[in-house]
Image (cartoon, rainbow, N blue to C red; front, side):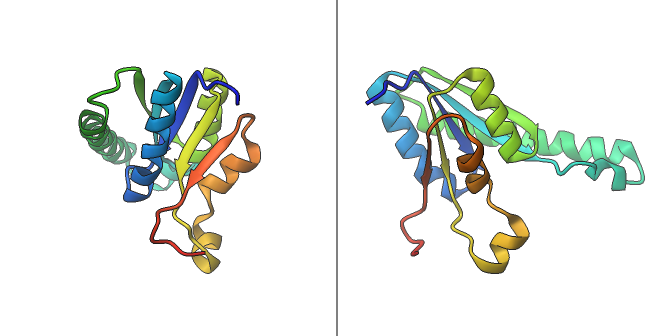
Length: 151
C-alpha cells in the first residue's frame, strides 16, 4: 500500500463529517501523515450581486467566517488533543472546486470526506460535493456515509 504523507479531510461541520473524521484521523496516525482539516464556506458564484448593499453582504460573510472559525477551533480542540500534525484551513468558495484546488496545491495523497447520502430530488437540487470530488480528484478519495443511512 502506498504511504500517505498528507491527508485532506473536508468537513462541512455537520455530523456527516464527524463520521468521516474518525477515518481521516486513524489513517493520519497510522501513517504519521499531516492532516489538513478543510472547511469551505459555500458562496455560489455571483451571490453578492443580488444584494442591494455590498456592505450588508460583507457584514454577513464576516459573521459567517467568524462562526466557521469558532466551530473549527472547537472541533480541533475537541478532536485533535492527541495528534498535533495538522493544519486547519477555512476557504470561501464552491466546496468541490476549493477541495480539489487545495488537494492539488498541497499534493495530498488522500482526500477523506463524508457524504449526506442524498437521493432523488434532494440530490438533483443540492448536487453532491462528494460525487464531484470523486470524479475529478487526481488522488484517491474516501467517502464515508453515516451508519444510519441505508442504501
